[in-house]
Structure formats: C-alpha cells, structure tokens
Image (cartoon, rainbow, N blue to C red):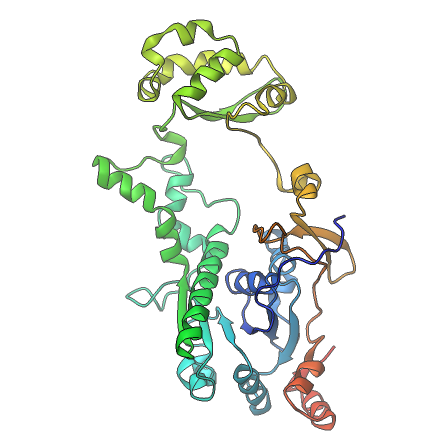
Length: 397
C-alpha cells in the first residue's frame, strides 16, 4: 500500500457541484477533486444507480467518485429543487451529464442559474455538440462506432470498441480543459460561462490522425490489425512463454537492434538501412525477427532490451498493475477505502506537479453521507434539515 502523502492541490477553494452518473461526468469531478477542489455530488434518493452496476460497470463508481461528498435530493420536490438551486448558487463549477434538457426542465439550466450566480462555470458533458445529432442518446460505445474508432480498432469487417471507456474519460478530460480555460477567463472578466464537451466529437478528434492520413495520401486508413505500419518492426512477438511488443522506429535503433541480437546479415544488407525501405521489405524481415524472438522467454527479452532505448513492452493486464514496480515507486496508486470497507489502491490522475503526484488517501462516500453537513453549510437550521429528511426531500445516511 502507498503511504499517505500530501500532493499538490492547486484547485483548493473551488466548489464543484455534480449532477452526474456513469463515467463521463464523474471523471470530470474526479480530476477536479484530485487537484484539490471540493466536489459535492447530488444523487437521487437511494443513491446513484451507477453504484450498483455489475460486470464491466462494477468499477465505474469507485474509480471516478473518490473524495467527493454526497447529498441525496428528490429533485421532483419543491424543497429538493430549492436546495439544489441554493447549492448551485454557492458553486464555482457545475458539472452535469444527463440527457439533453433534463436539468433545463428542473430549472437548473445555465441561463437561469447565471442570473443568481454570474461567476458559475457550467460544464455539460453530452453525446454530441450542438447540431443535427445533439438530441440523440449516446454512450461511449455509440461514439466509438460512429466516430471511426471501432472501425480502426477491430480487424476488417469486425469493428471492435476499445477495451476501456476511453471516450467517456477523454471527453471528461476535455471538459476539465474547458473548465480550466473558463476559470482563467473568469480571472479577467469576472464572468462564468457554459462549456459543452461531447463523446462524438472527442472520438473524431482521436481519429483525426487517420483523417489527416487520407488527406495526405488519398488512401483510406486501414483498420489497425490490417494497417501498413510506419515502421517495419512494430508489433507483438511471441516468446517462449508470454508475448512482448517491440518497436524499431529509427534507423539508429535498427542498427542497435541488429547489433544487440547479432543480426549481422540484416545489418549488412544496405537496402534495409532506411526505414521506408524496411517497411517495403517487411514480409522478408518479419519471419526472421519472429523466429529470433521466439527463442527467448519474455523475461530474457526484457532484460536484453532494458536500457537500450528500443521501445518494448510486456503485454500487461489490469489486475497485474496493482503490483507494478513503477506505479508503486512513483506513487501512481492511491490507497482507497471502498464502500464495503475493503482497502485497495486505484490509479491517481497521471500528472506530476513540482515533482509531486496528486496522491492522497481516498474514500468512497456512501450516498447521502454528507447531506446534513451540506445543508448546514448552506445555512439551513437543524430543525429545518430534519423536516426535509422526514418529508423525503433529502436522504441522509
């Protein structure tokens, strides 16, 4: 387990109010919380359903909702809406990722909230930016399919989504970028603004390199399993036990690779000295390299490549990363208490600031745990708080 440490908290003093579920919206709040912001999640009575997902969704809530306070409100009640409005009036930043128009119908849209809180930065995480598609329901997988990422990931004719919620998380990151830019502008103008980040446009940005490839070459990019690589040796190779990725991406590294493995005949072939010539000769080169690597174990290959400057990687699995020596040594994992009391470690945000990671003790707060505390902070008297709880407008743990 990592030690408790105090990392950088540049966003201390900022209050974030979240109306979010699943991954994209909560990822925004998690990044802001990791950087020191106070993040308050508004959950429905009974808690966010994301807490109870099974299978591949079982990790969503603990990963993206660490170090947030929880208040449970019935937003169909007048009292619940009153409290939500008061909470938004106290906020620097609002984050939401519900269906288009959901908060508008509750009177929690940007135009109305800015009347009483003109400094509010309102971040909507949506499926699409404004345009013909904006009313469609989108998920990470929908965006990957529409935006060309699934096509590029799977073999020809078999689109395949990436193995993590990459668009939800990246879309959340773009939301954070927009928030930080809006904060900087607020320093100059004193005014907040509305930001929208989206799944579809995030996907398009990520596949932009393949669009540019078509613009440059006039040829459509092939799916990654069938692509013509920019480098001849840039692939996964079987060893005697477990596979390993190896890349040879410069002419100087080609010389080093040949020297390291005693490939005198390949180095002597002057027709292979330039990268593009090696790409054209890939069918001739690769069988020799595959046969060479297959004689070693993975550990032997890694030991041989370590420190050479040649790109390589063992094929890791998520469950193996808990014990990764680099992550452990660099404070890349944070001690986290799950709702059921289990102590584990989860990834901190991938930043270092002034030589420190934003790494700290984490907790997953039960739903409604901070309801009374937040209501008191908003100025409600204890008697009124208990009336809200008794009436069902607020749930408190």
